[in-house]
Length: 402
Image 1 (cartoon, rainbow, N blue to C red):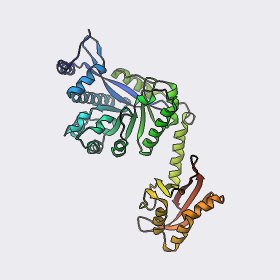
Image 2: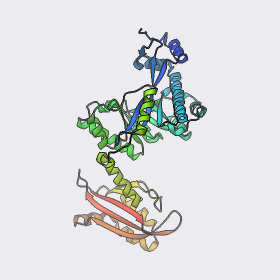
Image 3: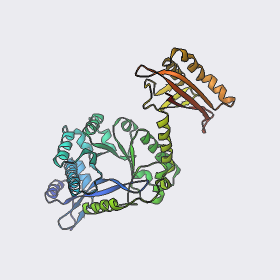
Image 4: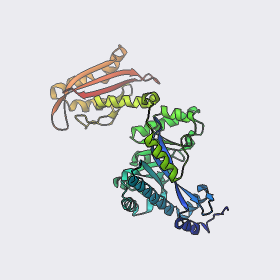
């Protein structure tokens, strides 16, 4: 029998639903975009009354949000997730990370992180299996220092996921500053089945900046092979949607976890690897050999650092004016090598050399490391034209040679 929910009766009904365990946790798996293996899941609340009637989340979640009762639902679901993971670990089953949704109202809970930790410890669930999913709207919640809020959760050992990115007025500033590990792309950005050029351009840009920020990307609401094919070309890591699986009861989720444990991947990963992901692998290989990688626009006298992990010196500015970069670089060289370095990478001379047909320039100098020791460093510039303009670009690769 259908029930009518309203502001007057929802508080009493939801309290009884908690007591009678009418609120069920459904799990929607997250699959690898490359090999279709289950990599995690999202926990979702479903209300099944004692007579078997299911109440749609669209009916009760907005009311709970409006009355501030959504906090109780979120904690109920999180506790159930911890219980489920604890049971799976005891039974020796396959365990994956499960994300739980938390409303923006939790940002005002002074003891939120403490409570999160206490529940995880109560069930003896390692933090690596628990992810806190925060909607994009929470990032703009007035009167809350969301950076401190999210940082405290991360410091406690929980992963952070920004949900529904692109569903509203997305703030790139928050994504840049919030220490989240995962970015979930809202299904609204796939509304044209990835056949619309503007849609594809926006998605490509989102995946690019997310990867540069070292965030795992998840595409929500994937329903067609066309969407999957395009998302693979963007290097999207995880897929969530009806193409693979709908949200399912706990027992069904346990069964597909069991099945995935028995399944052996036979398809060569290189056959399904997307071009964009292959490009990322190529970049990773370059970074392994060349810890200092710089992209420069000589025509516009600008540069930015792509990577300088494990380089001998990390005092180099990450972006700015190219001529100032060369001055700084020369200052770190052995005195006898400073002029050689400055002359080799003089910006005007490089532009003239490119116009004469030069495409590579290489020099070996002695550079002072952060540890106070001079080491021989080979620096190579590769020149090319920007395909969208006449600007002359330089890709700098640098590594120690001894």
